[in-house]
Image 1 (cartoon, rainbow, N blue to C red):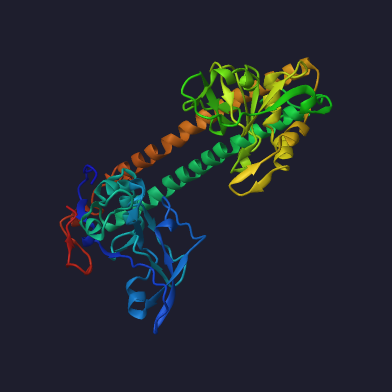
Image 2: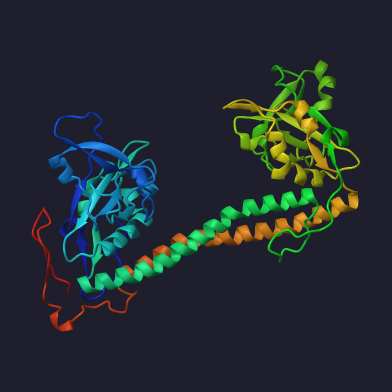
Length: 458
């Protein structure tokens, strides 16, 4: 449980089972038996952070008694009871009656506030501990699925102000966190839109319409590039080397695979080494990669990976490449960086992906199809101008990505700070009892199902 927040006069730290009834869910029943009712059933997968995902809701069979016991009513708070990720355990969501006659699975716990407890306030209070990972630390279980348990929820303590202050705090939090949600949604949309922006930049390189003006709404028009030519006419296109047989002695070489090549990026943290027997060294020399070569993925289980390419800058000496890759060595009419930009443009990669053969799990393109891909071949000064413009745009995109990433990282911290401020009575300016003359009068709550409670908010 999180460290106790400083509470103003009139507030009290209370167990959940003194302000709500706590009910664990029920597992799904598939077999239809007499006198049962078909009910929709929420699962842990339907709970996000502060939001419900109702795109896919399962069904279950319940008796009338079970239907009453596991029903959901507006104002109920649902908690994730079990998850493979401790960060997700205990995340609460407020139920507002989105689906009629709905029940909940055993992976969830229903917390139903008694009259006098604002459901929104209780949900916010539980969110604070969930976001801090306190529920996850309380969870138990072997490696894999962790369980919180209804007992832990019943014993959980939350700060509780008088009813009127609960409503004020809930109203303030709804407004502030709603703004934060909107801001985070905008940040996420901006972050997800950056790859599309870079796609448009690459396509503008292909058409020759890219300029260095990043203040425009997008890539602006400029003189188009030269005519299209098959890549085999302006570059050397060579298939990769099949995995050589293991040899105890010989020449050791880095052996690049598909996992080492991404779109405009090389990942060289884990590169396989192969030993070529001395008598076979000369036969593999034409499979060595040199600075300026473009490595292209031509076989993979994912269609999106087909055609992705990265420029080799000589990072590892004597590197070979496997047969799932193709090496393109540009001739004198192509700048290597220009070729990398053009080849990774969606407009060019789609031409290659249209030639994919195979079934799910094993997709590939023939070497002949790679050689037939056409690329723009403009004058070298034009290529240089387009490369410079692309680098300006890349700096702009990377700077924007860094700013948005920082904003996204600050979101959870800001959310926790807002909740902590609210749950210690510092958000509304009404932290003390609503009527000081009545501060000694206890606030009485109805039967919770466990024990009769009297709350004294002194």
